[in-house]
Length: 161
Image 1 (cartoon, one colour):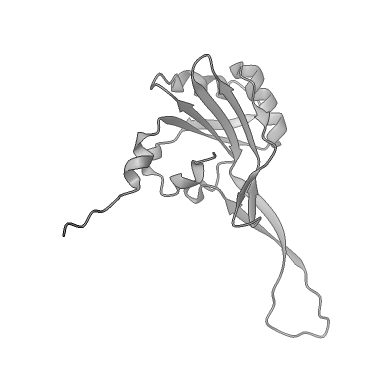
Image 2 (tube, rainbow, N blue to C red):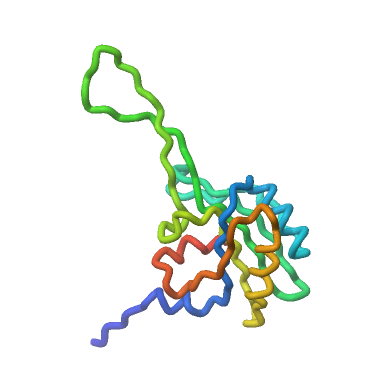
C-alpha cells in the first residue's frame, strides 16, 4: 500500500503577496491615515483584531480590498504589549505583585518592525519599489523595506482570513 504525504509548505508558495516592514513610532490609526493619503488607498480598521492564543496576543489590523486592481491591502501591527502579573516564587515581607509588561511579536524574526503592510495580488504585477518609495516619503516613517517571504519561518501568522 502506498503512503501519501501532504506538505503544507506547497500551499503557502502559491499565494502571491508583497510584504513591507515599516519602522515608526506612530499609533496604528495615524499610520493607516498617512498610508491612505500617500498611497491613495482606503485602509479601514477591521471590526475584530487578530487574536492569537485566545487573547494572549492581539494585533490591530486595517484592510482594504481594491476590486479595480484585484488587490487586498492589509496593515497589521507586529507588536503586542500586555501587562501581566509577575509570578514570583520567593516570599518576602511585603507580598506585592508588580505587573510586568510582556511583548509579543506577530513575526518573531522581525522583532524591530512595528507594522507590516501586506499586499495580496491576484496577478504578480506588484509595484513594490514604488510603494516603498512612497512610504519612505512620509516624514514620520523611520524606514520601510521589502521582506523576502520565502525566508519567513512564521508565514502562517500572515494568513488573516
